[in-house]
Image (cartoon, rainbow, N blue to C red; front, side, top):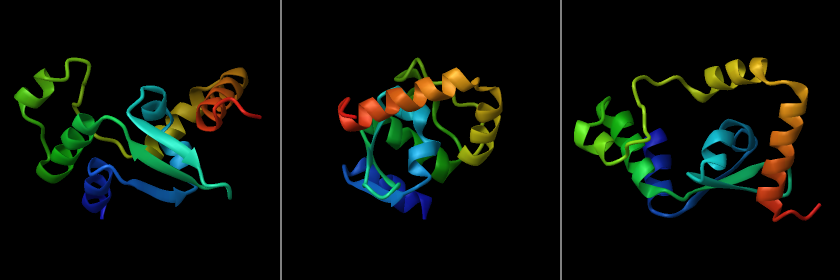
Length: 117
């Protein structure tokens, strides 16, 4: 199933809506890898903006590894191991201060709505 979702994203389609999309991909959204948009009912859609990152992720998912050549083309990438978003989300949430949580939420809301409140 994850392969089908990745292929859909790489092909330029958006996926969703799902509540978790609004929570699980904040770092990718801030880095400009994905675009997250609200569906209006507390759920979100996601669209891949950097297809090269999506192709690399799909390769890691399907083959369990990414070639050195692929990683050399993306010097900022450090892919040594995978932990699911649920585990990462728990760790990150425990480390965030309340002002940081509010700031990130405000920033992402502005990105998603174009600053309209």
